[in-house]
Image (tube, rainbow, N blue to C red; front, side, top):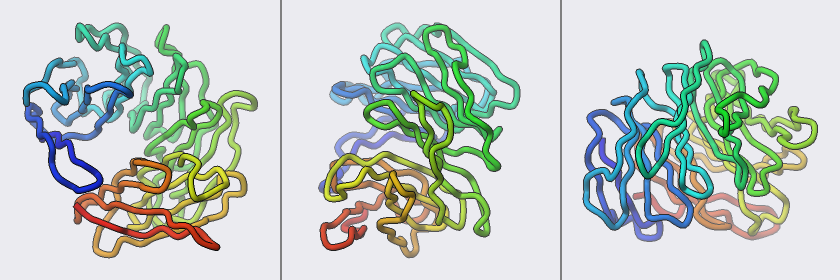
Length: 285
């Protein structure tokens, strides 16, 4: 029920915020801002000031069920939230006012991601679709062809040209990540297949030791994989023994990833140089 701010280099807890009455489901940060946002099973979203008090500086109530999607606009003025109540909402960050609400039948939101520099938000859903929302009017601008499994997460490339979504799965069925073209064909580009269970998170990786454009995924099968964005080939993989299902991924820098797990906290992973890229665990906190 708390929000912890940690140093990813040392693992030290720098701040802890308290206010939610049930488990926290998502965290989002505004770029170049000292504000952190959290979504919860208590149906609310809260805003926290990194250098402020331990209580919330703004509250965003209004959803009828658990809040499962959270995205902050590039200028940090607006917030977009999604819920299992089939709705997507838009909020004014400064006032906490709800600026819009849109409902779509069976659209149980699983994740939201703002397109850099644009007024569009990508949304994944339990109805197996990926939607592009025009946040100005809070209307669906595009819906990609439905997948065969629940879409669990999404990310957008830094240039805003592509988005990535991940699928649920079990026993080798499903569990793929899918690359979509946002600007030209607005269709599927390729799939990344290799996980044996639900893929819970997917992220675009910055250019670093891996010279080719690449993406990373985490899964309930306890593995994190790095993929060649151009060919779909798996470039590196690591199994986090004893971690249980992996919940989410975050990029720290060009060579470092954080991975949250059900059983063993947060894993620090490093992509190392060499003839072939290698992914290794360097710390846990």
